[in-house]
Amino acid sequence: MSKFKNVLIASNEKLKEDRANLLLEDAKNEQSALITDLRGELNSLKRQQSVLADLGPETTLDLKPGKGFNAKEWVRQMHQLCISIEEKSFELNLAEHFMFEWFTDSEEPTPISKF
Image (cartoon, rainbow, N blue to C red; front, side):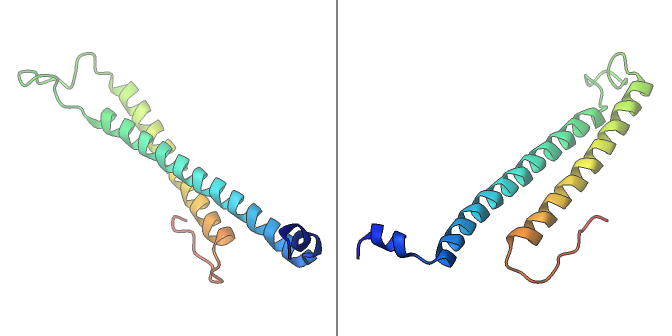
């Protein structure tokens, strides 16, 4: 039997299943991409925090933590980065939970790890 004829006589359920599988794959790929993006953003924030936390002297002869150190500005920036890291971690955790809940065949619910 020709492929064309098979398509014409395919059951409604088979067509629905094929379409559902394509949609599932598309949505799962997008959720994976979101998780990858969030991990990258979180790593970037952590790198920024690491740079900001490096208060070592600029030279071995210098005892100051860099010229023009502004404690108030440093605290503000570090505080903001800590908030941003927590928010991004929370967002990533939710995205991973959503991935498990909606795109795996497991019947067992997974707890959200950071609540």
